[in-house]
Length: 166
Image (cartoon, rainbow, N blue to C red; front, side, top):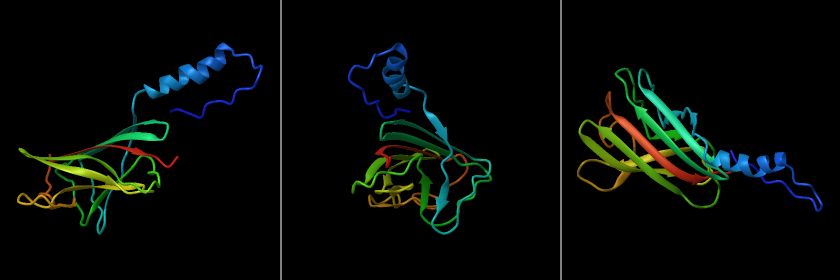
């Protein structure tokens, strides 16, 4: 992960070690492998339980910019709880007065639902929004039955880029 650059002093001798730390290591961190994390999946009323499903998260942070990906595959013993869903972000979002919008896709059998992943200012979690049903274009929070009744083998894929708080 990138870090604050050093403050140079007049007359300082630049060594290979300093150059490696200030230039090579900074660039290496920007092109490094993504870091895995486990995003917490919660609901407004009753939390879901992953059961034998899989939930993985990955992110790449350069400076204050974070690109994150969440992939949920529901299993046969996954329970869906009740209420609006949220997923934990790898880092809190900045309090800049703007809302960050990412992509959300729900694969349910042969149907793919296109939605948005919405991060509010100064948040540690975010929520996907999908069309409320098959006949409308209005958006609604994702829930156990919105946009469709969730079941084993359904997949949720989320990708978002946002400014972090620190």
